[in-house]
Image (cartoon, rainbow, N blue to C red; front, side, top):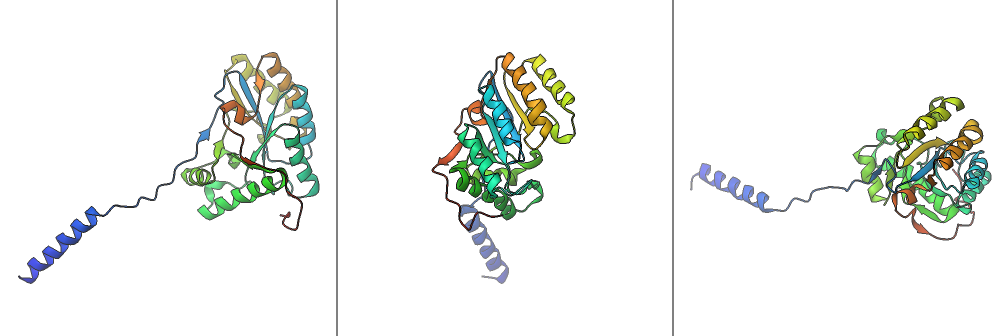
Length: 252
């Protein structure tokens, strides 16, 4: 057998071998992205960037209308979630019937981070919520509403759905209370079947002016004001247990 024929034979043999070998595709499933409620006549009022000093007033306003809020908490944004006052607010939210969820640890844009750093942003706040409340969240809101496939893959691995919104009160981009109220009025004039509203608990005007106004208008319009989990018919948490006991790991 000539050298050329032998080389051709070897090349064909390895080509057939490779073509018959199963390829292990590295595919990760993508987490569900929730952009609206699906249960008719429901409104999910969500509050980002806490825990912060206005949480008590936000909760009080919600409970006056038998409304359930959803708080997307950071671990170390306006303050450290493990600080005694902050941890107390987080637990207070749960004890008063509200839903708590992840807004990542430091409010970084997840689309700018590596796989490992994305997970770090996620697990650190999940761990804090589990320690403080005993709840392991099933929902995560990416900061700025920014996500890509890598973020969705990481969320899927962690068993979480991403939550965006279909209405923005624009409190975080400088809207005045009057402007936010007007946005709610314009929305309610259309009377959509459902609303998934973005608000921020870290603004005094949201807690004391815009939210009471929105609650009254939503109540008059006949909506049920529920958690994100209830408005999409899914469990709020992956697991529930007793809150943890403060120890040396409770720090930022």
